[in-house]
Amino acid sequence: MIAAVLLVLGLVGTVFGGGIFTILVLPLGVIVLVVALVVATWSRGAGASAHGDKSEIEPRPLPHTNRPQPGTAGTTSPEELVDARRRAQ
Image (cartoon, one colour):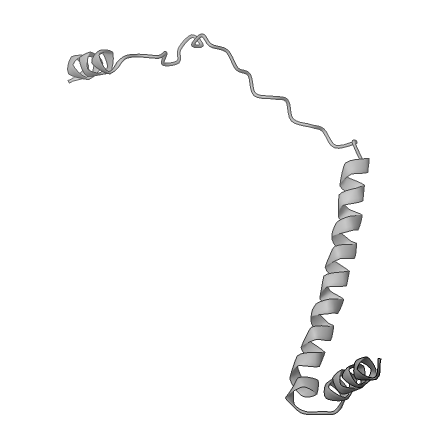
């Protein structure tokens, strides 16, 4: 029990006692913690409003058929493509 109290007092004394840890690392840690809390709060609020609001128009799904549309290229074999290129030359 005494060792735990001494360990806690040693850690607190190290953090607030001075040196490079207090001057550089502690303020950076506080800044990172504050930014993380702000971003988490902001993203949670943005996510709730996006999921709760269905007033936006959702895009239609793209049409899909297995048959080619008129005027578009259908499925061809490599031999048919070679023949078409020879005719075009």
